[in-house]
Amino acid sequence: MYEGIPSKVRSAIAAAAVAAIVLSAHGCREPGTPEGTNPGSGVVRIGPADSISELEAKAAGIVPSERQFRWQALEFQAFVHFGMNTFTDREWGEGTEDPKLFDPTDLSADQWVEAVKAAGIRGLIVTAKHHDGFCLWPSAFTEHSVKASPWKDGKGDVVGEVAEACRKGGLAFGVYLSPWDRHEPSYGDSPRYNEHFKNQLRELLTRYGEVSEVWFDGACGEGPNGKRQVYDWAGYFALIRELQPGAVISIMGPDARWIGNEAGVTRESEWSVIPVVGNDDAPDEKNPGGIAGLDAQAKDLGSFGRIAEVARQGGRLIWYPGQVDVSIRPGWFYHEAEDDKVKTLDRILDIYY
Image (tube, rainbow, N blue to C red; front, side, top):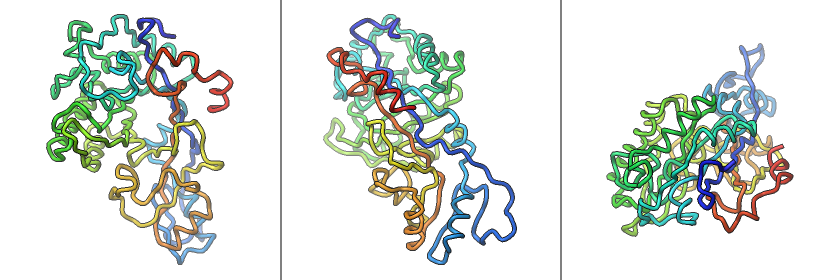
């Protein structure tokens, strides 16, 4: 499985599965359907005047968007964590690493795709940039990237090779991009860094063909100047909708939510129709990149009791499916000392099946 990567420097291929796979569709409104119900809609308002039967009808009328439908049909994706951390034996890099450390001389994206397909996986997401700020593509907006590495004399492009391998292999291709950047000097200077981040996001969305998913991490630590950044989530989302309208924005985004942990477990009942207090989609402090008013770690998100509770306060029902992301290792990146701690086949099968 690790052919093409030096034995002591292997990428960790961690499987990320979609937890809520409830695909539904509804036709025309039937006679007697309560007013305010909109079959075929992804958002329906609910309020204290709604009866139980009206709430049930409204919940049944919520369906996924076309992009959500395609994403949920994938069911099972690989989350490949590979980058500078693979070569420094760190889980979170500091942003001060020398690009010369990155030299995957025998890297084979085709082999990655072959291994992923052999597991029955239908999509692959690659860490284009983690918190250390090192870019796996030759970004024009930083020198902290593959172009400053000895790999392929600075002319390599991991993201490009993975995108091409996915296309050839028939896999959906997605990118992980960390807004937290521990290398970039403008991080913490909100307007300037947000433009920098959007410039890099634009590169990823315009160079590599169709992108099925943009996976946003919610981490927001300090940058090299000791400051934290106020992320322009609305601007990031708008750019994705403009350049890759079919891409799902997940975790810190409006299309798919984090399940609430990285242990590979869900709530006893996991729903895709979620009630949300209020009718404002603006980000808030609790969930700045996702749906305002929703706590992804709440014990109950979509039960009928929760729907009734939100209706009493006034709100809406949305289609917001959950995604489980869980590593096959203790952490996300490869560490040789953890080779004996890889999850067993029985444990992995228990998580996914």
